[in-house]
Length: 341
Image 1: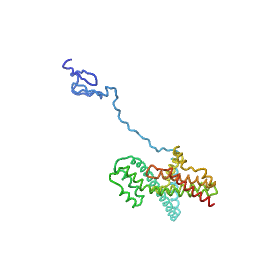
Image 2: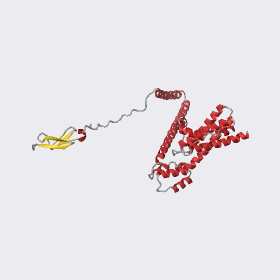
Image 3: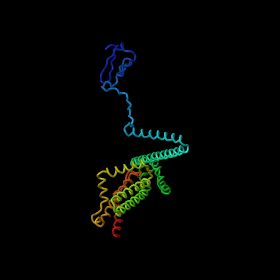
Image 4: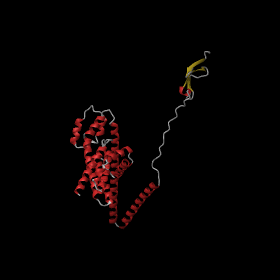
């Protein structure tokens, strides 16, 4: 090997290059670079690995697609606006008094519409915020960090009496982890709130059972159960600080429907076992009382499902025992009624 020829050991092989034919520094298009008399070769290129491709930004298509429904709604809105303008113009040409009357009615209607939409937006945001709180609670119950649970509790403490909140805050210690803080909240403030919700469920389940037992018509039975169920869901959601409007109410009902109809087999079996009544006890009830008992079971199950959805914590312990206790109370009321009859 002459003086003009240098050797290079790299990537498992030796390369010989001629120093006279190479400049001081030269790029080789990303595959290598000559520095003086040495050839620097990218190892990933020698290994047969392709260079990293430039990142391509993903373009998301808009979720809004014009279909028949969207076109119909837009056409209807345009028709309403045009009709309102033409009506106001015609009334102005006829009489100032008539124009003022139409303007007042239209303004009040728009004001009511804006108020309705505003309340719907607020209610939906509250429901989404509650779902986020519940999701965060599931994570905090497994967290050993300190500090985040107190921030999570801040909006929830507003729904409790000041004296109980003060006692709860006195029980908190600086060294308590997030899991300990949430557990303490569940065993103190939330337990009292749950007890009040249980009383509501038991009261409405008993009322539904009595209404069906006393009603002679099947249609009245259905309306009574539906009415008591809706009232119960409204009271429980309000009890846990969830403000319901039209859209948020529909959303909550959909969640309840999924929970009750499309429930897992294991949970369904456990619910049926908790609400089962012995044959000897059923023999003591009349046909109408037995139908009332089924209505009470449905109302109680609906109430505890609503309670499970509206609570800030994801788990509802001993739900089967709660169902059994509520149904036992309904059975006692129906038995007393049967004895009086």
